[in-house]
Image 1 (cartoon, rainbow, N blue to C red):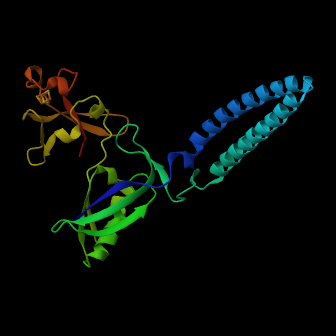
Image 2: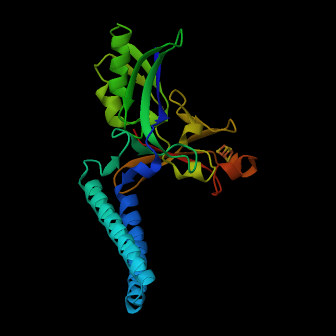
Amino acid sequence: MVAIDGSKFKAVNNRDKNFTVNFTVAKVAKRIEQVEASIARYLAALDRADRQDNDVAEARTSRLKEKIKGLRRQMQALKDMGQQVEAAPDQQISLTDPDARSMATSGKGTGLVGNNVQMAVEAEHHLIVAHEVTNVGNDRTQLLAMGQHARDGMACEELTVLADRGSYNGDEVLACEGSGVLPYVPKTLTSGNTKRGLFTGQDFIYDAEQDHYTCPAGQHLTKGKVRSDRRDNIDHYRNLTACSSCALKPRCTPDTHKRVKALAA
Ligand code: SF4
């Protein structure tokens, strides 16, 4: 059995040396605006210097011309970079570490330019049995490849692979079928209830034998009428008496009682 997870490793590449298409378009537009304003200012100063006919004005004129040249070069370089970024396969360029990519991390404002290093750690001795350096910013496409990599590393035919929900991807789980990799990955939480601080479907445990759900308060929600939406018949499980006096109700439902919906058999 192994556990797989990814970790974001910061590259030497500074954020200023990483260009993504959105960032670059905005940055180029803003910078060009600033550069054009500076050029207009210098041109006006040049006109004034031209009207004064002395050595100081002449020195000033050549200094201003140099500045304008520099700004135009800068503007051209920005435009070129904008085009290169748009033409890059993943519309991103890192100048120092070409393989490094801009990646989001869980903490707000803690994104980095780096690599996503995948590791498989075996459950008994906690040794790393496989690793891979990727530049994909998430773990959703790593399950099968890392599972097989770890299975080869441990020289076994079948391997149980544990991963957190960051690795969940239906296609990857399906692809593990018949590969010798047996994945255990929790599904991604897509319910809006999580954001609202309410219980989600995972907090209600189904008992197939009794055909009821047990809620976080330990009450049983039993099957009521089957209802139909446009496509399917849906079973509604509820408890018509417990919810009204339940201390957990504010975290459970704004309705008079909680209903758990499940596709009818
Ligand atoms: S409100 Fe109802 S379903 Fe929700 S926790 Fe309480 S008893 Fe259970």
